[in-house]
Image (cartoon, rainbow, N blue to C red; front, side, top):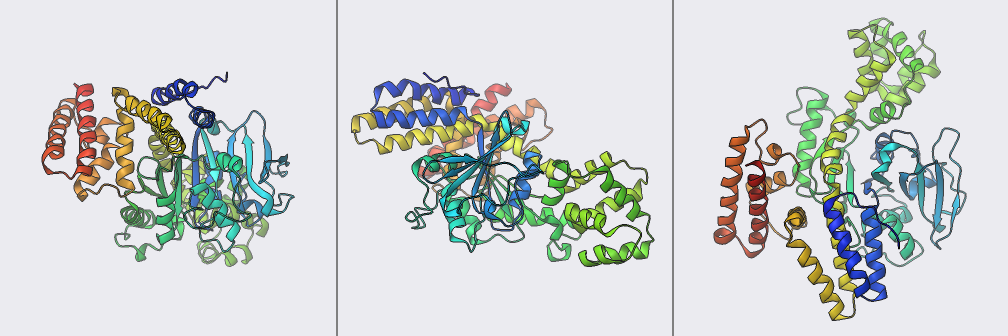
Length: 511
C-alpha cells in the first residue's frame, strides 16, 4: 500500500473518499482514483501562462528565487518545464515515448538552451531544485500563446487543455497519456499579460483545465500579472497622471475589469527587477557601478539615460562592460530607480539597494496576493480539483452502477459541513465559467466573499469591530436566503443558497 500524505482537512476528506471507493470499483476506475490520490498528496501545481515575450520565464525565475529558466529564445523555451522540489538539483528531459534522460545544468545553474534531442521528440522537461519555495508549490513554465511555432502552441495547449477543442489532438505534437498526466496537472494559474488584453488571453483563461476534470480558471485559482509595467507611458493611461505606478495600477484595474470573473486580480509587475533582486543576481560590484554613475555630472547622466545605446556607448569614467551588465540586470528604468535611491542616500549599501529594487518591482505585492489566493486556500483548491477528477472518473465508467456509486459518494461528501468551502469554490467556478450570471453588485460581493480567508476582507469591512461584522454577516445571510427563494433564477438560486450558507457560517464563527 502507498501512504498518501495529504496536507489539509478538505483534501483529506476527498482522499478518504477515494480510498474507500477503490476496492468497490473496477480496475480502470480504481486506477483513476489512485491518480487523484497522487495529485492530492503533491504540492499545488501553478502554471505560468501568457503570450510569447510577455516575460513568463523571467517571472518563473523570480518566483523560484533563481535564474534557472532561460529567457532567451531557444529549444527549451518551446517546451513545458516543470520546476519541483528535489533533494539534489537535477534535470530530466521526458520524451513522447515515455523515455527520459538526464541533462546537466549550465555552469551558471540554468537549463541549457540545447536539449540535445530533436524537439519534436520531447514531451516536457522536469527540473528538480533544492529551493525551499518549491516544497509546497510546483511551478510550470509554458511556451507562449500566439507563437508562430505550431509545436510550441500545441505544447502550451496540452497544459491548458485546449488541444482537443482546437481540433489539434492529432499529430506528432500530441502528448501520450503518461506525459499528459505529468504535464497537465496544473491547479492554479498566473496569467502574464502586457499592456493590452487580447482575445486569446481570455480564451486561454476560459480553456485552462485546473485538473483532469476540466475545471476552468476563475477567481478561485487565477491571478493576472501585468508585466513590464516600466514600459507604460503614464500619459497614455486614464488616471495615470500620478506617475508610472499610478498608471500601472490604473491599467491593471482596467484589465481586471475586462478579465473578471476569470481572475481574482490583475497586479502590475516589473519582471526584470523582480528576477534580478530575488534571484541574487545583483552584487556589490553592481552597486559600486551605480554609485560611480551617480557621481557623474547631471548633464552626462541625463544624456546617458535617454536610450540603451547612449547608456552603453557614451564616453564616461564608468567601464562600458559594467554598464552593459547593469542594463541587462535592471534596464533603464531600474537604473533610474537605483540612482534616485543613491541620490537620496549616498551611503546606501548594496543590500539595501537590492531591497529597494525588490520593492520597486512590485513582486512583494504579487507574492502576498499569491499566498492569500493560492497557498492560503491550497487545501480547498486541491480538494475541488480532486473532486472534479473523481467526477471525470465517474463519467468514464461504462458500468452505470459503478458511476452511480461514485456520484453518491461525492454528494455525500458535499453534504458534510466541513465541505462547504468546496460548495463556495464550485459556485465561483460556475460564475467564472458563465454558467450563472449575476448583477454586477452581487457578482462583486460573491467574488469578494470567495477572494480571501480573512473575515473583514470577505465582508468588505476592513478594520470594522467584530460586533459590526457579526451583525452584517447575519443581515447578508438573511438577504441571500430571501433572494434564493424569491428573486433568483434556478441557477442563481443554487449559488444564492451557497452564499447564504457562507455568511451564516461566518456569523456563527464570529459570534
